[in-house]
Image (cartoon, rainbow, N blue to C red; front, top):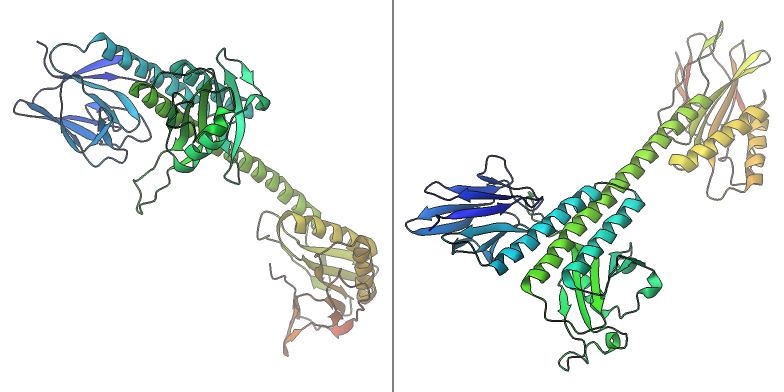
Length: 469
């Protein structure tokens, strides 16, 4: 008679026999385990088998996904010949002592191995993020589920942003893609499964015990139904316990003929397939989100470079003044801007702040800067009124600009108009003065009027203009 051993099947269906002697046999995701397994729900140190006298004891060692023997959750269990051990979602470990199991049990084990092969491919496909690959992934899930269950057709319904279910893909028994029009059935069963997270296996909708409950579904040429949730796993290895297990959709299968009661192996197979599919679908969604964010970040970087290119390239210098400026947006791009103008015998400078942030503010800021370049003259109040009229004509709702425009002459005379902007600071040996003369913000009021003031700067005086971000 053969000794105690653990038969382990990997994702590709290869079988490894691990002898169980007096030493402890550890099972988990860490490579240092005697039995090292892959899987998101398998803890690094998940379970162990120890020999105590003539008994072999399986113990869960604080795993997050649970340990099961013959589909029963266990913390500690005395193993018997032929026991199927499941850690996390996987069912590819079998305890043997003495003779090998009967052919039926081995056939079931082979079926589970085939399921693991499909799950491995799903994980690979789920790492890809195009819509075409997602369709291939869903088609593979449905085709395998139809083969496993013997159903006539299958559908996958995924959760919409409003948390409802939407038809996503349908397949027939001959691997033919079905249109949404072919999905003629009551939504009761899939919506119940989605809401509760509990699978439903109905071999005969005409059974008098349940016919009344499913009378709407029975109006369609449907006799048997399998429906399982596409359930994302619950992850418990967190500082705070969070129950984040939730379905992302359902896998629905039906047939026009009465079906035999589903075996435990088929039910387990469908649920395992659905769990793998849910993870692959979620990975696909997350990968697509990452791609979208990366594209957006690239576009924003280009927009930032473009916006910086609209600003003056270098600080102007003359024998009677020195100027310097910079813009650092709150986000990649924003609605603030500054500009310089070489006027006949004088120097013009402006600072503007468009209401809001981001792309919309940046577009309007670029437009206002263009208007300013076209209309600016040596009279700040007249310039501000002209810019206001141009913006009112555009009728941009809920958008306005706070702006300051000053013109400095070689003699030190600064003529300025402040249209609702943060008052610049004139710093001199006599103290600090705020430059407030002007008028209302530019854009929303067609009858706005603007004033200007002239202040005289002395050598060493400094004017600081700024925006509030």
